[in-house]
Each structure stands twice: as structure tokens, then as C-alpha cells.
Amino acid sequence: MTTTAEPPVPAGHTTTAPSAAAPGGAVVSPGYDPRLTNEDLAPLKEQRWTSYNIFAFWMSDVHSVGGYITAGSLFALGIAAWQVLLALVVGIVIVQVFVNLVAKPSQSTGVPYPVINRAIFGVKGANIPAIIRGLIAVAWYGVQTFLAASSLNIIFLKFIPASESLLGPSFVGLSALGWISFAILWVAQAALFWRGMETIKRFIDFAGPAVYVVMIALAGYLVAKAGISNIDLELHTGPTLTGWASISAMVGAIALVVSYFSGPMLNFGDFARYGRSFAAVKRGNFLGLPVNFLFFSILTVICASATVPVFGELITDPIATVAAIDTPVAILLGGLTFVTATVGINIVANFIAPAFDFSNVAPQRISWRTGGMIAAVGSVLLTPWNWYDSADGIRYSLGILGSLIGPLFGILIAGYYLAAQQRIAVDDMYSMAPTGRYWFRGGYNPNAIIAVAVAGLPAIALSLFTSVGDYGWFIGCGLAFAAFTVLERVRPMIPQLDPSAPDVIVGA
Image (cartoon, rainbow, N blue to C red; front, side, top):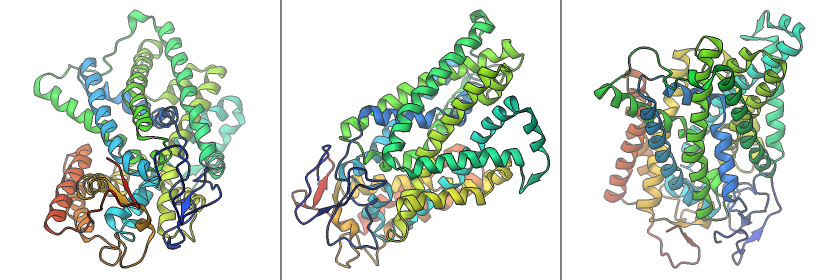
């Protein structure tokens, strides 16, 4: 297999029919163990995504209510606007570098994130990072669906006044109107996901640019109402921080940007596998991250700044901003736009990841579609509306799992780039034979397991019991990278492959 759009099928391999996750078909060897293989997890036969498709993916990931609030909050830290912009640029460039590192192994082999982990954690051990990432995605899938439902509530209340009566007594913590909006969004997202990656690709190709059109129109409207001379980009109140205090705030802003993107950054291989070349993926990442995120952040701060002279108060929630305009067209267009934006990020960040991750656990019982629906059902059972507004709920429910994202990233990078030297034996990632290259010890690489514990436990403790906050990702990533590198040098487990071997893919 090569990195061209239609790689040749290796001798002895067969091509499956197109599937939901592999629209161009997958390449399967007769020797692939069914306990590790299905048509969604096997290496792709065709890799079709262009730079624009990757760019659109990041637009869908950035253009959301959460992204708007996050970007706007950075301008309220008490530092100058130029310092915020500098922190944004530095943070998003760090994300771009990390994303490119994660992209290469999956793009070169055509396999998703949980499968590439088999070369590092072992064919059985790869379920550890898959389950951790999948559970995080399930929780945030429910949160994002709840946020999108809030946008839909505003539309109902504006155009169907009688719906206000549905805001009365709640069931399991959510009003009848809340359940209706949540159910509509839940079904819509499930239907979109069920149609497969080609439909999802077309949706995100449309959703990102559509949000830009509305954001630009919203910014123009607010600036016209406020008067350009009344726009103040310093959103914070009180004195501006100086000296070491301002530097500390900038570093915190950089960490916040990286932490915000840590989820999709970790499993970006699920999308990079579709890239027609690594160069195309890198171009898409450049356009979708530094260029796109900076422009979106500038639009965000302009809109937020204009709310002060227009409405007499600072509003950093785009849903509340649209509601404050209080005109039917604005509420309908704005509400539907932010619903679309939130559906976009939910699909790419919190639906596809668990679909692959849960399918990896039992490929013959759990297809890509089934894995995604497990995540969707799980998101309802978690009732995110009951704990999303609780600091303790978020801290103890997601803080523990979130602190493990950094270690998983550090181990993957150390394993692929240092230990394996960017060489992957694709067929062995689908073998349960004790003689397989990635069987290690009983299907697990003990070095990877130890590194997760060595890095994950301190990261969890620091996140829960200290004020390190968003630095937990960096601490976990650094500790895991160092621990795994040392362990592989003291007791090597990952095989040193011959780059000239016909079954070895070389990413370098």
C-alpha cells in the first residue's frame, strides 16, 4: 500500500466492498484475525481526502459554541489584545505540530487511531487507549448535543410561544422542551452518522464555510449598530496585567488552546487515514488551524466587544448574543447556524472517535456504526445536563479521563517516531499469532502499560488536587514520553523492522 489516492492491492490481499467507514473499500489479507478485523478497521484501499477536506474538518471543529466562548474568554484574562493574539498563535501552532505528528502513521498505513496503537500497545493492549478516548468522547458528545439543544430551544420559544409551557416540571433533570430539542438533535446526528463517512465529509465541507458567512454577517451587524469607534478589543474589566502576571496569563492561554483541542488531536489519525497524501494533510492542517483559528478568534472578539455598546453588557455566548438581537430572522438564522456548527464538531470530535474505538474492542460484534450508536446511547444515560454546570461534576467525571489524553499522546509519538523509527508492519497489526510482531507479551506491551500508569496517575492527582489546571495535558504527555522512551531503551519491546521488507510501511 502507498499513500496515493488508489494504492495497489498487495499480492495475497483482497478488497472488501465499500463500507460506512471505508467508502472506497478496504484491503484485507486472508490471514487477518477476525478478532482484530472488520471492513471498517482494515487498511483503506482508496485515500481520497484533499487539503480542503482536512481544512473543512478543522473548520467544523473550531466553529462551535464552545470554540466561540473559549476564544472570547482568552480576551478577558486581563492581558493586552496583542498578547492574547500572540498566545492564540503560539497555542494553535503547537496544536498543528502535534496533529501532524499524529497524522503520519495513520495516513501512511490507511488505518484509524485505535489500530495504529496496536503497534505500540500490542494488539490487545490497544484497547486501553481506545476505551479511554471513547469514554471521553461519549461524555462530551452528550454535552455538545445539550448545547445545540439550547440553541434549538430559543427558536422554539421565539416562533412557538406556547412551547414556553413545556419549560415546567422536568424529567430526570430536563424539561419537556429540553427533551424535545435534545431528541431532535440526537436523531439528526445519528442519521447523519449512519450514512457514513462520505456523507459526513460532504456535511463538514458545507458546515464550516456556512458558519463563517453568518459569523461575518453577525460581526458586521453588531459593528454597524455599535459604531466602529465604540469597539474596544480589551474585553476584561479592571486593570491590565503586567510583568510576570501577564506572562503567566499568556502561558495559561497557550495551555488552554492546546487542552481544548487535545481530544480531536489525539485521534486525528481517524481522519488523516483518508488523506490522499501526507503533504495534503499538512496543508489542510495549516489552513484549518493557524489561519482558520486566528481569523475565527478575531471575529469572535469583534462580536463580543460590540455587545457592550449595543446591549450594555459583555456577552461571550453566541446563543445569548443572537437571542439579544430579538428579531425573528436573526434568531432563526443564528440559532440554526450554531446548531449546525455544534453538530459539526460533535460528529467529527465525539461521534467518529468512539465509533472506531469501540469497534476495535470487538470488531466482529461491533461495527463502526454500532460503535457510534453505543456512544450516542451512552451520552443520554450520562444525563449531561445534570452535571455540566457543576464544577465538581466536570472535575471528577472528565478530569480523570482527560488527564490521560496527554500520556496516550506521548506514548504514541515516542513509540512511532523513536522506538519504531516510523516503520509499521501493517499485516501484523491484524494478527493474534504469538509469533506476530505486535503480540509482545500476551498481546500487551508492558512498557506502554507502565508508562500510562507512571504518567497518568501523577497527571490525575495534579489535576484534581492542585491548581495546575490545563497544564495536566503537558505534564502527562511529557512524563509518558520520557517514561516510555527510557523503558524501550532499557527493555526494548517494539521490533526493529527492515525498511526494505515488502510488508513494512515506512513513514519517513
